Amino acid sequence: MNKKDQIKAIRGMNDVLPADSSMWLYVEDTCAKILALYGYRQIRTPIIESTQLFSRSIGDETDVVAKEMYTFEDRNGDSLSLRPEGTASCVRAGIENGLFYNQQQRLWYIGEMFRHERPQKGRYRQFNQIGAECYGWSTPDIEAELLSVIDQIFKELGLKKTHLQINSLGDVDTRKRYREALLDYLTQKQDQLDSDSVRRLSTNPLRILDSKNNDVQAVLKDAPSILDFLSESSANSFNQLKSYLDELGITYQINPRLVRGLDYYNDTVFEWVNEDFGAQSAVCGGGRYDSMVEQLGGVETPGFGFAMGLERLIQILYEQSASVIDSVEKEQLADVFIISVGEKARCQALLIQQILVANDVQVQLYCGTGSMKNQFKRADKSDASVALIIGEEEAESGTAGIKLLTAQNKQTSTQQTILQNDVLNAVTNLLESL
Ligand code: AMP
Image (cartoon, rainbow, N blue to C red; front, side, top):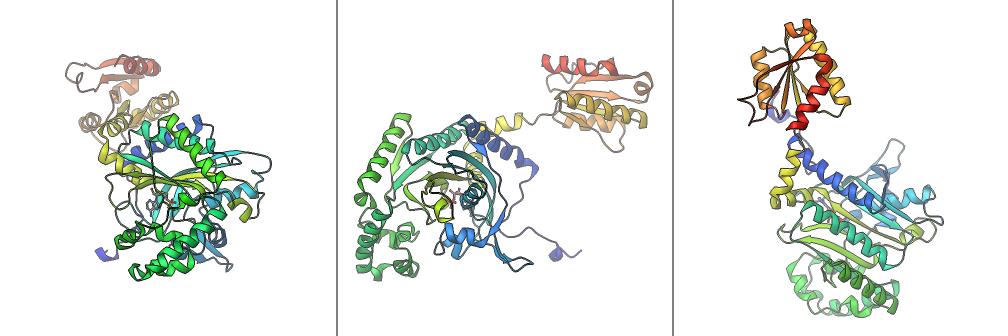
């Protein structure tokens, strides 16, 4: 086949190859373990939802909905979209399945998200998020708890140089008053804004605070701060959160320009930002969204959640942390490699593999044809610490050779013969003695 006819992955969508998948599993397992310790339960929702779900919750004017969604008509003519984030689906599923009636929920999810952004380091069109959502609490204690979950995950993974930024967007009234003040200020400086920001003056001026344009950021330096507009209850709640964080020893920076890209937030919003990662430095973000459940047709239920980008997190870990990579690789060692020659021996090898695996021993079987010598070479190259050898003679007598393969024992270890019936015992004892 002509090279240019070769089918390639879609731009911005990545394979996770075997060399990296143990790192992925390690990170996913660590997150799942900590979330479970804090009492969060997993929810799994479909990857495709009605387009309306996202336009009504995330907001038509947001970049995510206006420019980045993978939207298509299905065969019935319905408008569907690949999910660009996980929160809206959690809310939809919660309403549909009655999870919010007189109940509080601590949920978490993991999965692929899709956004048609311009791909670059740390920014992809298909990416994975782990997130958690809490429903039924309007108090800042749940916010402190969730930030503590994230802090714990980062600590356990050994993630460094990643700092928490927090802000409060206040309640509806706060944002209305602030919006007017910001509009007043920015309208006077309109000639210094880029076209995107000028457009947002009439659609969503708060989003201008998010602008990546340096000239716009320079204009914003003297802009009014939303924190000066907070109502008493929003300010109290924000102060309470700060004192919880102080108590927990979680350091944070207050960033009054942090508004986040999605429209549904109120009061506390946050982001964890890595010092070294360049433009795409946000590893995790989230906040409070007390009106979304009602907006999507459910009973009034406060929500608070976060989403963490796994590609970014893993890339940063690779760049930062040799110790994490070491521990991940150690976990991958196979225990036993089985060499076998002849049909009868191969059949016995399969049976022994089945027995050992049922007892939690990791076994690699040599498959295909190959001389004893070649199989030994393969065994030496494998991660296994023990080789089992079943040649034609052993197959006839119901025995097996057993030999240590670990680097320090390779030269000195001699092959012993054992009965196949004793393999489990012999292997377990040998592995325990290492
Ligand atoms: P957001 O849903 O935009 O708040 O994003 C939450 C987290 O998901 C970010 O902090 C990133 O770590 C990650 N993320 C968002 N968009 C992308 C993307 N296009 N590619 C990779 N990771 C992303």
